[in-house]
Length: 261
Image (cartoon, rainbow, N blue to C red; front, side):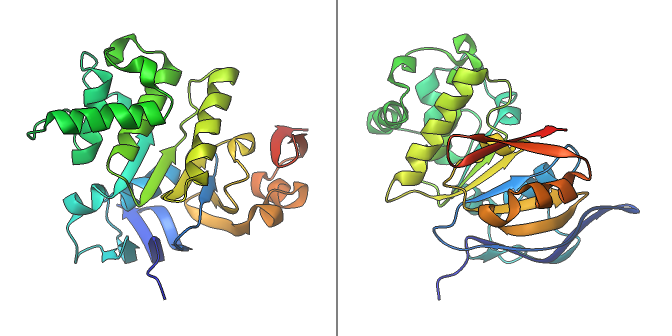
């Protein structure tokens, strides 16, 4: 049987007398795409930091891409994980050319500190073009719109041919049209035969594309529910999750938006 992409086995994280994550059991199998849905403070970002090796469990066992924390090299692990987050943008060098930012994804670094070749730089340009960002080649990061920056982040994440691609609230700060363009790019990646496992984190159900067939509802640091989108994205289950009256509105045939009622 193939090893899981990741596995939380009774994982908890504590800070002093506060429990941040509470007994998380969760597994992503190869070729599965998952979405995590939760409100502010649910623990979503903390879970992602754990997957990326920035935080370690206080209790339980965490396995990512075959490596069990405490018995694997975290720097080598992060090179196999693509990460897209608006928070990451704050660490980038705004005067760098976009293609060099994309190339840095190969080394999982902020900035380029390792030697690279003309072929490496051309490969970065090729990945950027594949992601629909050919027009960004030769521009500095600081002149890009927010939508263009997120496109560059996706290209950077794909540069290392990741086995797991984490999309941490990637639509933050985007207008309606930029959001839909980015989501279409995510859908295109999901359709590729060599697509990595995708993990999409959001506050909003309307951002959960049909390719995310598996959903976790995270609340107050604990798994409220996990399963298929058909079972969880329903008025009954989401009403329980939000503990408030809600209404669902269909977007096309396979997406839904939730609003207070």
